[in-house]
Amino acid sequence: MGDIYAILTALCWSSAVILFDISSKKFEALQLNAIKNLIGVFGFFVTIIVFSIPLPKFSSDELIILIISGFLGITIADALFLESLKRMGSSISALVSTIYTPSIFILAFILFNETIAIQSYLGGFIVISGIVITVYKVPRNITRENLYIGICLGILAQFFTAYSVLSVKPILEEHPILYVALYRFGVGLVGTIIICILKVGFIDLIQTYKNGLRNHHLVLGSILGTYLSVILWLAGFKYTLAGRAAIYNQLSTVLIVIFARLFLSESLDTRKIIGVFLAMFGALLVTLVDQT
Image 1 (cartoon, rainbow, N blue to C red):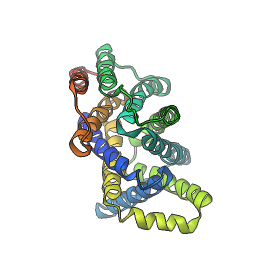
Image 2: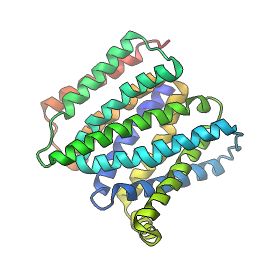
Image 3: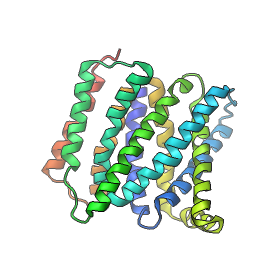
């Protein structure tokens, strides 16, 4: 089931990225982060109430980890990612996001001494190779400044995201996923709101929420990317190895290219098709390997 959750994460997140890309034309990265986090927190809270999930007893150490994870992974990493997306667009941002998988592999080894069979490393390499082939060409409408800044922001975003989810992996094994998500995004939302107030003021923040909640692209992207994909993402890390889940998550990069063709009328040439098939083959190779 962990594999299935991780694949569904890629599907939901890639759909959300396209919607966020469209929304970034009307909103700044900080505004997008504030709106999507509010929708995510609301969704987690309502789901917990509807299914009457009892409140778990987090230890003080676990609460500290959740706070740090929420601040780094939601307030900081998501804002960096959305700014990177705004500067570079979906395709190049997807290329930069390939750093996510090796970050998970390295951090999982450092934090948990998690080892993965050599075939899985080969599968991961093939996935990333397919992604690089798919999106390596830089669009002419991106300036050098936006490209370099966007790459740096994107790399930092993926590293913080990888660390933030791995830091809560032990907590996921003991507590309900929805509460872990609620606490992380609750912290992320509070942090984002504080930054917004300091930067633009309370009145502008309220106006941002009014405009954002009327934007159907942003609302749908938040439901898919902040609510559904986060639940599936954490479930994937809970029920399978971190490195294995990360490889499946990385398929979102290829799906972004496909969805960009379907919904944004971007080209899908031979190079991209080859990249898609390579990435899919790499993911299939991972599924055929028993993890240790």
